[in-house]
Length: 98
Image 1 (cartoon, rainbow, N blue to C red):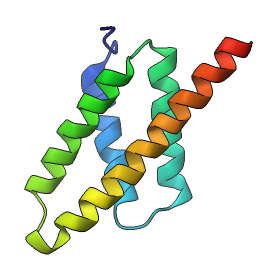
Image 2: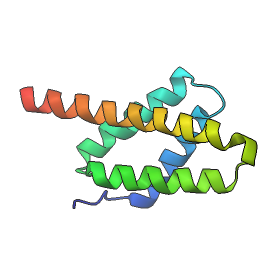
Image 3: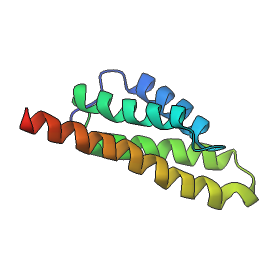
């Protein structure tokens, strides 16, 4: 598995972007999700590393969440991961064509 050259930085950026996405599904936060996906491809970070990172961040955020927020966090977490992975997919497709 190829590691991201700055996994701590990626973790920090992922957490910040996810926390921005939680309260409102804003375009700015989605732009950060897209950037994370494109950066992961450019840096050779595997989808498995991204998925593990997402799981770790989700676990951290859930640990800090009130019980009545858990369903909301999990739902938004799935949405956010889908956006990151969509960016990965689009970037990989464009690289294969180019």
